[in-house]
Amino acid sequence: MSAPTNNRYWEREGATKTFTHPINLEWLAGNLAPECRILDYGCGYGRVMALLYKEGYRQLVGVDASEAMIERARTLYPHLSFVQIDPPDVPLPHVSLDAAILFAVLTCIPGDEDQQALLKELGRVVRPGGFLYISDYWIQTDDRSRERYALYDGQYSTYGIFDVAEGAAVRHHSREWIESLLAPWEQMAMTDIKVTTMNGHEAAGFQWLGRKPSG
Image 1: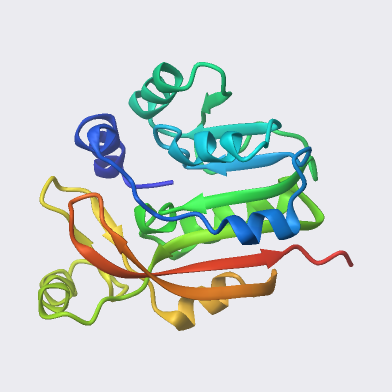
Image 2: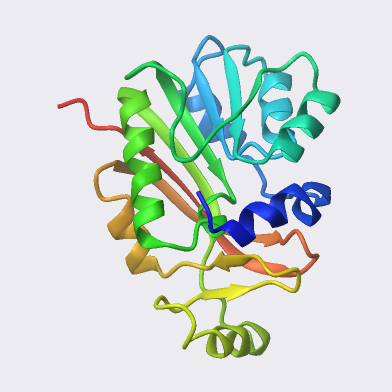
């Protein structure tokens, strides 16, 4: 899912962070019945899983590459199912899920090929007609972000990738790239949002809901 430096980050500093991406409950209620099988990929410490459980969903599984994150999730929510994985592999059968959720996960996967591999794996485990729900970050337009992008422009081949203070590489996304990455899925809804990053800054983000084609 990420470079070695990112792996180390999520075992240390990252495992202490607080995540804030909002969940669109109307999207969920309109498309996913309580008995639906839902995967939270990159579940972190289980915040989204806990919110889903509160809304009545019971067939939930959260997966994450970070051992520290999984341990934190199991401590906070012992009634929920969390599994540590070796990305991008998901230890579930083909077409066994009704939906997969990716909240602030793509930002932690800087490379094009790694993101494509993840989406391919999710396409394997989600059934035809099943759903994909993504929340992530656009490329920002403020001066601070522009300076960071420019600083790492020579180090990374994709504009919008930069290192956070603790050393991990993260990515903000162009609309063109997201459109290309998600082209195999049928877009159902998309909206821009404002979100507080794990380091306390307001950022422009997006939420996207799509369906796996049935054909």
